[in-house]
Length: 418
Image (cartoon, rainbow, N blue to C red):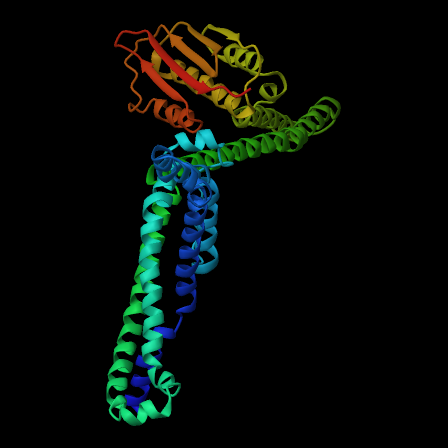
């Protein structure tokens, strides 16, 4: 029983799942035959009436030019062949639309595709032709007993040993069927690997596209986080903060009007009024830390002027922007200045500071300087490492020049998107 099952599997192996790879080889051969036919048209039409020089021109230049000009179309045809016959999707090497023919001819992707159409594709199709021929020969040899019955009876009577050599031919046909099947699978895999490398994006192009995708997704994430921060700021400002203000007003009115209450009750009301005002002040600072409303409403100049006004040391602010950058870049610039000035107050022992914000082309330049003791290091735990990470989140750069004894100059460059 097991021997019969194994024999059945052995006999059926060449045919199981062979339809798609065989049709893949057939379509590859047909594509190359179509290209060969188009390239041979000048020979068929004009060769008899031309001199030897013209014949050489037709033999080399015109077929080559025809294949080159049809390169983008051939690429799409080959991609369709892999997609429909093998379920292999070969991605386009171009991030957007396919470039025009002159740009395509100059591109590295175009050169790779032409290599496939001019060299690798024809060689693979030629090998596929021999493989398909092996299928035909193997099928004919395997069915030799059927063909023998088409031979006249007299011939079979005169050749009584035909059964023996027909058995040998059948066995050879079965062996060739297995070889043809293995060759078909191997050739399909080879063609797939070759086409993926030459018709699809290169390793460098894949990495570049991956970097672009990651940059876009990171930008979207940063924008989403910034929008969520603004939403929380509005909710706190319009909700919890207004409720605390209303509570403080009511407690203040109670403290001023309810004069006939016992001293202990008036003391409790006064204490609650004071704590409500402190909570309002803390919540205002928290709201400003999330996303100040003045930044969204009026831009960087008023927002940075507000930071300078709250600083315990004199801070000179100069903002020169012809137009507002994107909200995300504005927020990064604002928080960089805010955290840098906080570091100045805490660590620099400075008597004054200066903030300059200017735009040069597509770059927003933010410079924060102070006359403190210097010695600031991005890895020194002074918050500069956090500033560098915040700047890097939008592909910006941060540099620190802080010799011992001062002054300290922090320079930030941000990609400025109007």
